[in-house]
Length: 336
Ligand SMILES: [Zn+2]
Image 1 (spheres, protein in one colour):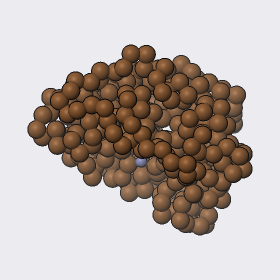
Image 2 (image 1 turned 180 degrees about the vertical axis):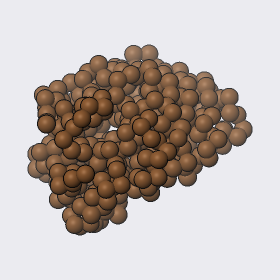
Image 3 (image 1 turned 90 degrees about the horizontal axis):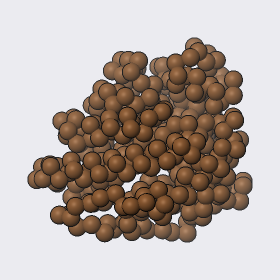
Image 4 (image 1 turned 60 degrees about the vertical axis):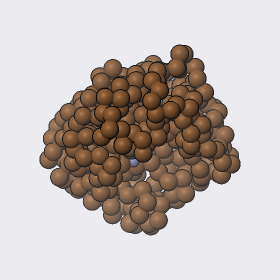
């Protein structure tokens, strides 16, 4: 089976020959080693569709991980809303949101012609260009989850505070952000993305309790998943255990988990409502460990029943390709 066929068959609940590898955690997979191999670097690959697509397409041949993933940051939508980003020339740096144009009391709407603003067309174009590799490798496009985007627009601190002080305003802002997530997600799907991966790092268990998640995150994710349509994945960083049941309720095809979540326990909660993706440690193991440690952790996750083997979150750009290859090899070697 070629990797794309294997992943899509699995997600469509057909039999496959082995566990696929993939990446859906904040979607970033590019390494500095990949950049050096093909002479395409950040920050240009954050801004130019050709370079973005070439770097994403290099990941499978150079690391073995069966995915072509764009974009490499989580600032695309916020920038299109008018937020100011901090850029550096470093090859291992992603842009960050530093300033929002909106004040706390202002009503916010999705800007007109959203799909034509800033780098949104760059990412959509990159997905189109990746059609060239799609014969073999599945294309995943990452979008910022509505609650996380609301944090970019309002300032994360303000948003958490407003949950207590002005919950109605938080809900109406997150609703507007859901519209943006849906518009972008649909645009990416129409451009040819096989999977849309929604990342909600600001909704992690260390920030929100379960009741807050149910009220301020879940209904919006539910709508985003339904209205984007097709195959979707959902990633929440860190300990997502308390919200796994609600995550599975959103109707999403796959749930991407970090290494802090136990695969066996997670599978018990999710049952067959969604596929479980993860959960090799990005920092401790992929970035800082040895290939042997990566392989051991990967085999552990496979043994516990992970459906799709993947990094637990976004891949740190200084990760050695040899470590990513060790993860891919574990999936090849593993026999149920
Ligand atoms: Zn993450």
